[in-house]
Image (tube, rainbow, N blue to C red; front, side):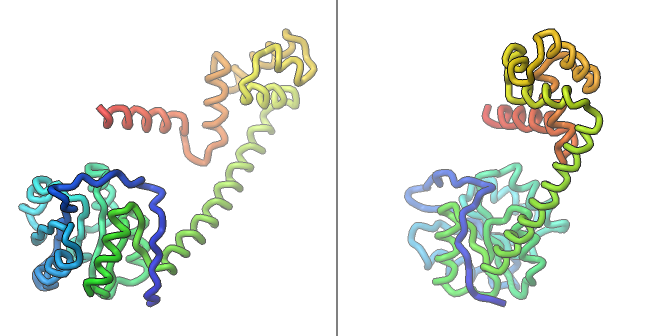
Length: 262
């Protein structure tokens, strides 16, 4: 496995200003003693005077102590992760969105590493456990970056490019189907509605009378089962989005954000 690591920007979880406890960054380590967790804790503490380290084995008391510690960084041994690990990590990050997660272990293969990063983990230490390497990884993690090997990062890039191509193809196929159900005039009017133009402006753009625009709008309203232009725009996005009911999901997401900020 390549030892080249990429300290890359974390685009999914923008870094907050880490609250310090008397100048200390709080690091919570979860791992089995057969992995020499005490040794790991000593290396982390020795790597930087600004780290305050707590450690515990997985178990019933683990979550209570973690909550009480309010850590900035959570270091978890790979064998302490519950399966399905995606569900475990997603659930944890939903509850504690500001925490930074670093997985450590031995013999973690590329597929496993890809899974944990895709699930939302911010980095990992795979076998290389010396103090210098730990310090470099933690420095990247607490500053809002990811700590992953370059070939894993490249896999994400390649996968994203493939996904973008698939989504683009689906997007244009849905537009084609949409247009097949509309007349040329209805399509022209819909294009201008999406721009946010008023009826007078639409009439000028498509060379129709005001009454002609209203007639085609009425037909569009019936076809999309809506009653106004705002609803028509949302219904159009729902029709062409690769994600079902995108407008509903957007509203739910906004409401959750508002609720979380209270």
